[in-house]
Length: 450
Image (cartoon, rainbow, N blue to C red; front, side, top):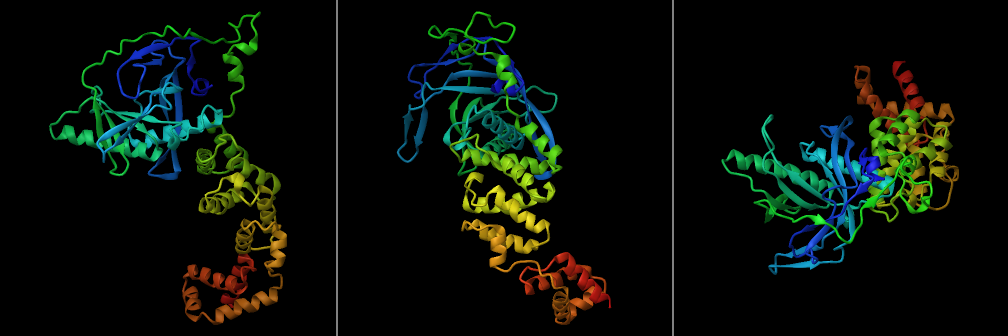
């Protein structure tokens, strides 16, 4: 499924091999892998990249996928510098994993981080993995080398077991700069394995890889070839439930993140960067949740849109700016939010009907967040947040504000219209957010022109 989602060619017959080497975290002395014929080859992964960290300026780039292979995991070495010893955790040794090998198509840490983030989203969408890096469900080994344009690739170093997208970006950028400085000072780059020290923000040597190591690959004698079928090669007399049909899986692939983003933009007219934020937030929540396929922010947004009269472009602002800030502040997932899509839609309907002001709506949202079981309308009536309907009373308040702000009035009459916003704010304060800012602006402008 992952291979199909990444546009790979799926080998109907893939083979298992033994890779022999000695290391403390590999008790068998060999690793079962797919060196000759892996399960999937020649794919591609497209990802979005922000220009100068601006979400409004995004470009799409593509990295080639060399192969996807099945192999055994090794143990985990725990280095205790204080005691000058290394402990080995073998709990995961021998467990099967999927390794994805990318071609050297990325040129900086930001690109590597963006590609892995998109891969995370795809894995979570497919259900292939929860891909929580902090829990070891997704790890990255970054191979880094530098060279002048038009020249062959330089000697590469491998930064092992990076467990964070943020650390991946930092590790790659640091290693690029380190190699440039080393070569610039007349030194050479060693073919070695390094680790990223997140506290120091640098890579440190782990072990030397100089000289080509003979892994003595041989066919794995205990595992037969992995045979897959497609619609054409599937034998008629075979039980379809006992075999893997590539075409059957292809037809049932869910919408991938890139497709979801396009649909959100096309269907609701929101900005591309907003669709990106919706899915990235869902990914971050999945990384903190035991259920990676639970409904997230995109579904919440769509449910609100279906239940409110407010335009999607306005709804997205309330979700990304207001709801999201509450979720982040309280470290909650969308499913744990005390404000359901129904309640938020109900609140936005009151605002759209001009029954309350936007200031009052934010006050109501704060009350709804307390989870007291009240509806937006009940909260509005209880706290007397209805929009002030008496225009004469509002005119008197506007006049009182004008009379008390002589300097601001002089500045406005001199041509500084920005000061008008201060007077609008003062009227809002006096009415406790119950006045319509658009109407207030009209009344103030009328009185100031008299």
